[in-house]
Structure formats: structure tokens, C-alpha cells
Length: 158
Image 1: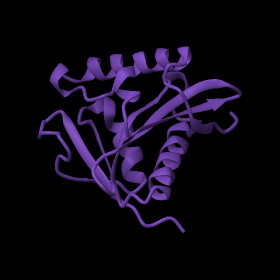
Image 2: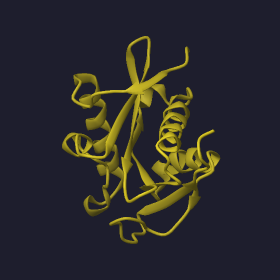
Image 3: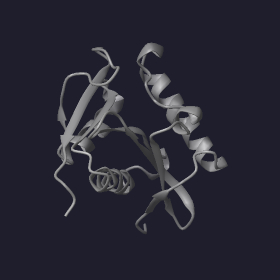
Image 4: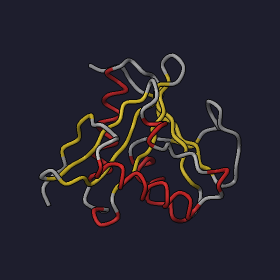
């Protein structure tokens, strides 16, 4: 399988909308409604959001976004790889791209919220492998047994 190419993209593209719907359905299937924090299309079009996609030969395989929070702090949002393309390294490439983007923008901390249930174990492992560590809730989040919060301190881009 060729490596995916990760670029800034428009979340209104039809294939992206379809994958985002799958992402929201996955979150709703594995989390109580009050603990689904995934952004919908409107949220991804909001200020301070940079949306990216991963494609192989034009085929969408994954998505992710960077949301700028307060000064120096960003959040990963809407990380999702199409089920039929999991295990091919696309999520790692999207994550590396977003971390690089955060560094280039001078962010010093990048955080995320993901589920604490078994269905989210691969995501938690990916983030831990990239250096993210568990942390307390950040921004407007509240503690929930259904959420895992993680953060990564970023060194300045060289």
C-alpha cells in the first residue's frame, strides 16, 4: 500500500462528509451522548480549526484537525481512519502532520480527548507511542469515566 499524502482540505467535500459521518457514528456507538466530543461539519468549519485529510491515489483514507485553543495550546480533533484502511500507517502520518503544523505555529502544548473504552484503545496507543501522556481535563472539558485526556509538550520547530 502506498503512503498517504496529508494536506489541508475542505471538510465539505462529499467523501470527507461521508467519513466524518462514520466518525460520528463510531463515537456515538461507543460513548454516551454527553461524552461524544467529536466535531461535526459545522464545528470543523469554525474559527481556529485547520482540517486535513490523508489520501492514497486520491482515495480518502483518514482525517484530522488542529484546533487552536488559548495562546500556545492546541487540540487534536476529528482524528479518524477509514476502517478498511486501519493498520496501514495513515493515522500516524495525519498525527505527524498535525503535530508538525502545531510546532510550526509556535504551539507549546497539544492536547486531545478520546474515549476510555476498549474501542478507543488503538487511538490511545497511537497517541502514547507519539509521546502523549494522560492529563487532567483541559479547556471546557469535565472529568468523565468515558474520556481519556492526553497532552504532548512541543519543542519549538527547528
